[in-house]
Image 1: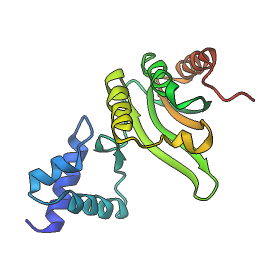
Image 2: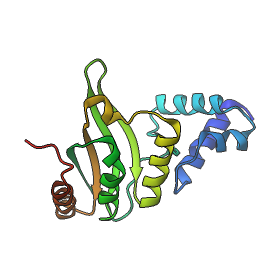
Image 3: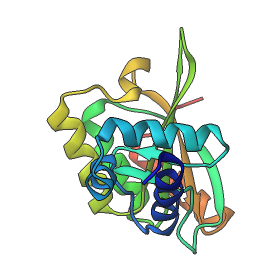
Image 4: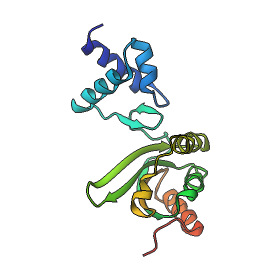
Length: 172
């Protein structure tokens, strides 16, 4: 199969997937290396396809059908509270779309999360702990933003109040 056709099929697979598709899974399917998949996805993104790379694989940006409102929350907490912070959000049926930090050299850095359940949170946090990498929020002494997907503004405000009560929001 030529590279152009393979990229077209990769795009079709990612578009149809309900969960992120890992580069390793795509590499096995097409009998190519994981690095070739990474390059193919980079080329698809360069052509304007909005493919998100998450810790669990590639996906198209989409919220659950009931999450149409997106807003940002400024948070600040110690790294060991991250799992609980994320649970607090997904337990209210909201989605954690991403995490954003302001780096002194690189400017804004965004990490795509797309967490919708405790299972998603556990997979993400287990990967962080197993790889012994630092969370983006550790680069900024715990200060970070989250984009949160909610049903509507009232739902967003409910999530905001829950995080405020828990002490996870950055104080003004």
